[in-house]
Amino acid sequence: MFSKACEYGIKAAIFIATKSYEGVRVSPKEIAKEIDSPQAFTAKILQALVRNEVVSSVKGAHGGFEIDVNKIKSIKLSQIVNAIDGDNIYNGCGLGLHTCDENHPCPVHDKFKVVRDELKFMLENTSLEELALNIKSGASFLKI
Amino acid sequence: MFSKACEYGIKAAIFIATKSYEGVRVSPKEIAKEIDSPQAFTAKILQALVRNEVVSSVKGAHGGFEIDVNKIKSIKLSQIVNAIDGDNIYNGCGLGLHTCDENHPCPVHDKFKVVRDELKFMLENTSLEELALNIKSGASFLKI
DNA sequence: TATAAATAGGATAAAATTATCCGAAATAAA
DNA sequence: TTTATTTCGGATAATTTTATCCTATTTATA
Image (tube, rainbow over the protein chains, first blue to last red):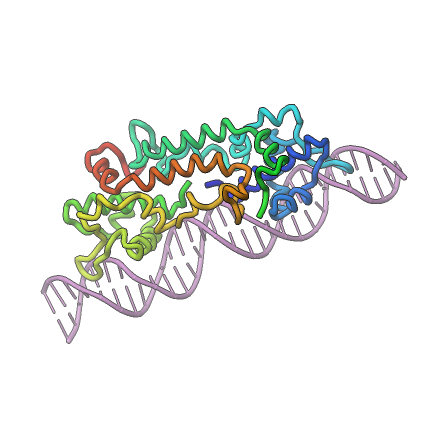
């Protein structure tokens, strides 16, 4: 469904959020360990999240990644996915046609529309807050 | 959502179905032209569809690809996707966890479940027949 | 100011996916 | 039986995605 980069990005953001609630900044090394991902590749993805203002970074000694606690509630899954994979997942044609809309639909246009509207709604209505709180409470897991 | 290979496979199957209604076998060359795909790569994908018994092939002169007209109604999109991409799209974990189920869910397990059940239902309930008939009637298109 | 600790980012490598090429095998028809 | 036509399948190449490495830059602190 999503790229590996996007999967890592989502998990990283959730972990950073949980640590930010504790007022703690985290390094790519800690993040990679916690979400079971390749460290250097994860660092690249973090850069994309910083550029898209999903997470913020502090350079230099005692630096690391964090998310403004007041922002966590308003960050939606869609922002993270968009920052890494773009909006192609729920905007592009399911069969890769360049022109695909109501007037010139691909064979599965209507069928896919239902699924993708559902996906879009889910991504736009799932906050980083609820995902992070479920990790903190032990209701869900970031690895294995 | 799906791989390029899968997109080509779906479009190829639809085109073969439309021609099979006319009792005509088609070559990879014709198929690639009609669905705007790379010919040799499309031929490989056709082999996978043959192995998975979605389409049948006739070798030698006057050969080509066809689908038993009586089978077209019973072939579902899920079979085509499964033949090419496997069942990972609607069975694998949305965040790539090896172990992800009700007892040990990833952070988005429940959220994704809704979307993927919708996707699974759509794939399993969309027949090649309806897709092919919409192409024949001009209600949908295979390229551009 | 010097040093150590971090992120940023370019260069490169590995792996997977997408795409091409060519000869082998099968088959209809001359 | 030969020939032309067609799918099959292995080898290879190109591209994209995933992953690693190394240096530059930034910043807190001694």
